[in-house]
Length: 123
Image 1 (cartoon, rainbow, N blue to C red):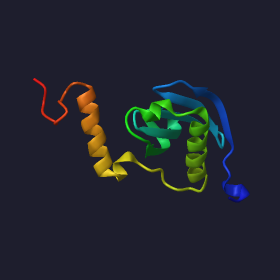
Image 2: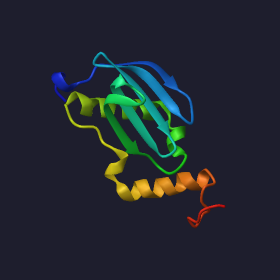
Image 3: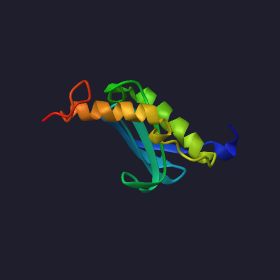
Image 4: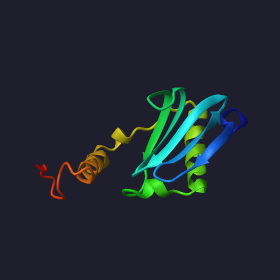
């Protein structure tokens, strides 16, 4: 990676479980990282949680594995997404894998008690 696309990453906070969270700056822009359930996201700039200026998300494992990643894994995911951001690439979205998203949504509804294991609505 050349010097122009190597991101300057400053992590002010990294820790927790379910979710694992981090805050800091990437190339002078504030960022928020969150890993929970079976995915992680990194938002940069803008309103970090609701409407970041740039956002990248990826699936990770099965529920609830993403909430138990190590700080080393979190740092690697932050670096990976920050490099994408520094290269001017668009962020990835969970919706880019519709089959995985449908499976995850079914799991979320079951865990909330809205449906049973077969997908039937609980009354």
